[in-house]
Image (tube, rainbow, N blue to C red; front, side):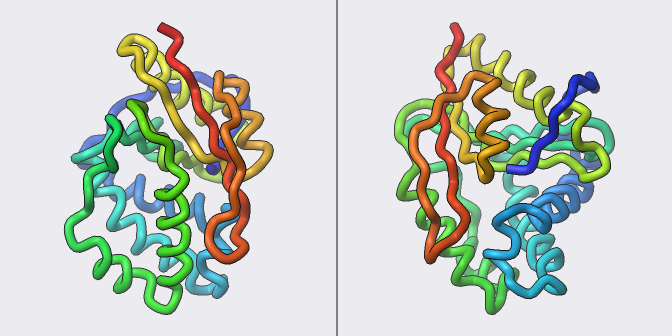
Length: 203
């Protein structure tokens, strides 16, 4: 995950139609520079463009079928899926759209998706699938604020939360927000490890 640390307070709100393009751009930019970006797309010149096309599939669907929280004009955003022992809502025509969006890099995207699905825990929980902060807005506490906002909602409802941190530093951040480690696994053919973490409801 791409995140920030610090104490700055800004308003968290649910994404609206005007946030669609900023959130797509934010996610693509954040994951271009993430640890998984080079593994998914080895060509650094194509990386951002491919990820932009990928999130153009993910974000519009999430804005209807998931909880998308944003801060400011797209400085930070989080995508949460509510799961009740089943897989999340499917994106119509996802396989063909993914192939078209990723081209020669399709294999790595499929590897990552299959491995994540195989390791995903069962039971009622909210899955933090994506968390991103603009590079110029990091270390201002925006990621922490997004987490605190959603955790308050979960605690009122008695729901748990699940996340896969992409770096050890991110896992430490989530630990500070009440997440316990579950497992660590390597996606696909030698990709960067993912740190599975679970937060129990505080209700």
